[in-house]
Image (cartoon, rainbow, N blue to C red):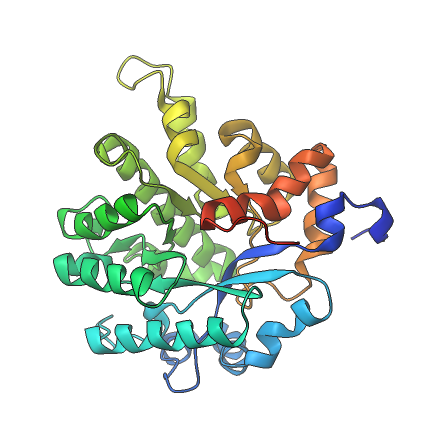
Length: 329
């Protein structure tokens, strides 16, 4: 990474970055994912088990001026039992804990409520509670569950609530089977490929399943791992079996983060979705071992983005997506 002084950065990037993609597991919840990790990744997950509950670590980059805020979620699949199940009461407790975290750090931490989107009407009621009563800014859901993708009927009530309330849905990757098992011998890149594949599949399901057409107010965020699905939808958009307006539909409904922090991926995301649909995101602390701001700025400059485009990705797109106006960054 090159050395870049603050004076060389676009104004909003120099003053701070809003990281949209952060995970946190309060100490009261057991991190079961560490036990389920393959032997080759056990040491990595043991280190993550020390970082994920650490509230001071979560705030450290903000206090140091590297970030202006984090958008935080509590991933249910990291505390699920052996069958992948998390009791509804636990999910409610997770959202209560997240709301308390936000209240302790107003303006610095924004929360996305965890919802079991495949739990039908009960999930939708929890989504409404989390937004209306707890003041959380959006929803965090798994992109798939077993054979179901996010366009499944079971998930529709949750998506309807998000569309009605005008809050974003972070459609986060999971570890799909059997693909994850098949790719495990190939290390971390194999695991990420499996997760990116199912995140891409969820994006295609939303487009091709007619969900965006039926829910015009729905906005979803996918990770940079879904770039394959984005490219596939864009590449086929001019063919007769797909609407020529696929790109326009995606730009109305789809946001993508910068998780993999590669200039070519950021450039592709901007070219396909537009600079207003890309948000800074690090996957902290799963992948974000270094401060985001410098790496993000390097990647955006290498992608030859304008100062305005860099500023939008660094902060203002997240603020707009979260419905936050007038926040100094």
